[in-house]
Length: 427
Ligand code: 4AD
Image (tube, rainbow, N blue to C red; front, side, top):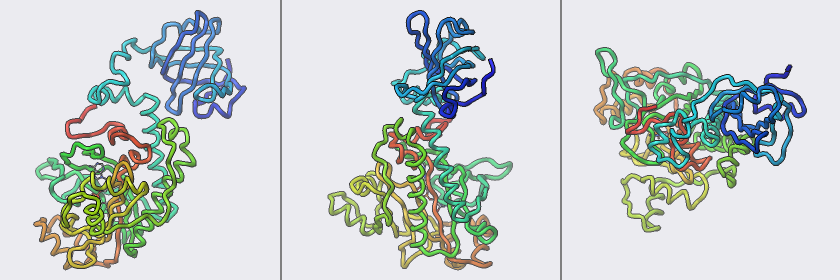
């Protein structure tokens, strides 16, 4: 039978026509002796196939199992009652590849997190999990679109480096022939170097953190979307950050209604500009007022971030952290107060960290000496302050944390294809 090859996502534009769809069987239900209902998945979406005894190839379907790959030729019917909106009334079916009957034994939806992580290569095929992973791709698309609209150029910095960006404690050393190198914690230093060559820049790269934190928001390998801007002031950097976050939420509401619905998110709103801003000192005072014991100089821990931002219900900038809590490269406002910002959101806490960079050669050299850095490894970075230094700043957005926030996920691991956690290197 002649029919147009079509993916499930596009069924809506073929109503009343015959299509040829190929995909994996997600669910089979026999209804009486003569009717099969198959939920089919092809990566672009899910649909229902109805096959009646008597169609050509019906016997091929009789013994199929979940995850068998089939080809169905049939008519597309709009069906308001179907959870997918359309169904295919099969006229013909082939089995392209069978699947063992035992997949149900591999895991159950309510299996322990450990089992679900061990079977992640199969779990990702599920409706909810695949929707989350599709949404990750959307966030990357929205981030890129925003940066491109603002005239930023995408750069690809190296992931193997000798110059630590965020301090020695969370570095992953690797053997690099006869030397020791590190997996990058952030592409920031290289983006700074790209500024005089390319103008404002961004990148989407992996960053690595040997963090022994077992929290709902820490990975050892995560997707880092970073921006570096020349000739800006601190307030302009925060404005840019706000616009980016608003852009991502706005596009999500415009394009991802189905994903939001699938994840049960019905209260996502575009945050209002300007976001509330609290300095570190103000935040400490506020926490104390609310009975949280914290002294000036202490870290604002995750639970404290959540206390500040969850009750606000909107994104919140924390700014001007003490230098002792921030990396060597931060420009200071005065004394030991840095021009730094963290953007906190309800449900997760920090999703963005950034600020202004020290642009004076002597001061930066002093900062590197203060942390006992091997100056040779940073000579190239110091050169940037020697040859045409300008005021500049930027930030990094944690992609998985952003997805965790927008889709209200219970754990960051849900936002990764294959999460890397303290005790997890497989699959
Ligand atoms: O605040 P961080 O450490 O900032 C930097 O790395 C800067 N050099 C970025 C820059 O200015 N270009 O990290 C930025 C963001 C955090 O806000 C968080 O969203 C994410 O990266 N992040 C993590 N995400 C998952 N797991 C981890 N272990 C993370 N560590 C940081």
